[in-house]
Length: 360
Image (cartoon, rainbow, N blue to C red):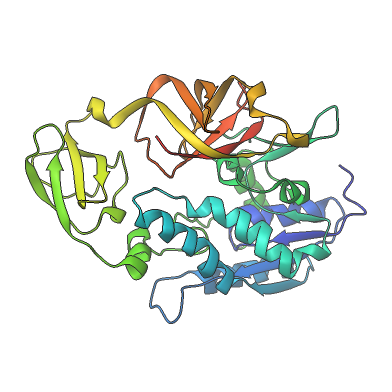
């Protein structure tokens, strides 16, 4: 793509990836405008948030390359939209992914409404690629770095958002990005990747949920025997397949089921209980990224992910009469939970077809 006549907005997060994005564009003789999306904790929370340091880093990098940096406040939109989505799902026992919806609603959504609409392209530090097919359709494609690939986090964006998306480092391995940052003496070259919820820095996910839903103690029972193992503080603090952080003696224990009506958490004992695996499941509300409104029915055999891992699993798809799809995985999968996104790819796990919400 010839970028010379394109108006480009770069989203700088303060991290090394988006900083190298700016370097790559400037290296090509471009002079993009930079933006830092401000979120921060809701109200006057005393959470450990790294946003101040993020902004300092973004400012330093933009100044290094002579680009202006503008702060865009999307605080209200984040808490009204992404948090609302997350808490609505968690409240009814589902396992949402706020980072997936953050891309659709904030980075390529609220930002576009506020400032991005003035630009042809929005460049981010995602590890993903795009390509055009013979008909000119634009596809979301995987990164060559399987560990860092972020197409699963982008699989709910709208087609118009994909048309504007630019991923200048998507063809690189993480090591290459680090090497460029160190060679160019970027201020954040050695900065660790953020591990928290999108935009919320070091805020613990359970603290985030507790802030809105509080606690609701209930019994923890062994699935096979009905024996009481202990007490949980709220079903929304636990996910299907969870093993760590349960705190019950005599384990290891796996979370295998949540009964929302009776507020019971069911667990199974052992390192690899069969109850923690599924080979078939359903998903609904397929959100397609196939150009020109192409049908998922054209892809009876696919690869897929249900969480952010380097591995792609092979499966056959079956359309159901109610509009859902059944996934028949080649191998049993650990920790399939309602509310998770099933992200679908072609057989070569190169092109992302879209994603749907797992219902079981």
